[in-house]
Image (cartoon, rainbow, N blue to C red; front, top):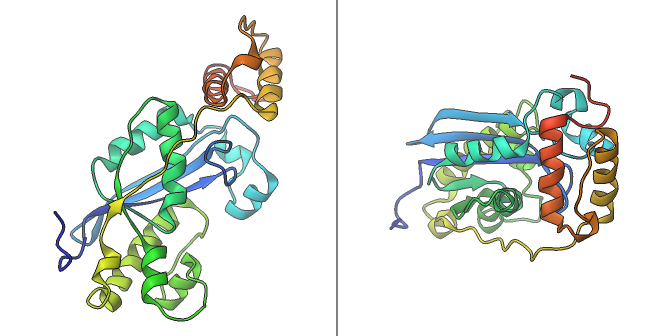
Length: 245
């Protein structure tokens, strides 16, 4: 059991980039993480993930991640299990961690992998400890503590910056606000299976037609997660539409 007088100095700090804001309807396109032991970064994890849908232009503009960058990336079927293995049973850390965790939880659930962890949220810490109405975004916290984030909105850089910001928050506020720094169970309930979406149906039909695949089941009967897995499988084995090998 963690004592409130003890700082957490060993953890995995992670960040993701996604195609949108919905864990059930959007996809992870990058996972970045640093493993911290006794306050020092000892290992890095950084992998792009090829989503089963085209990248929205606003995501390309925000992250700088392009279709060309994802051309050689692997599917979430390969990458998510590797990240879970990298993280092990460590405490997870992130800035607004439930957003990132929710995507991983849904991704793991689609693969049939249990994923329950404890976590520390630097956004929660900063909102509880720092007075004033100024935004507690990672960008603003980096400015406050003069932390250089070489490439904001890229997962590995944001993960490293978050770990450094956490150390500064500990130094400034742990004594007075130790409770904010304690890990808590990360709770995200994966929503009950929903039917295939119109977007998935259209894209799946296009994929089947493009790759000349005969699919004997009724597409309308697929659940949303079943459609996602099928799309992922086709892309993994055959490639995306207009993808040249």
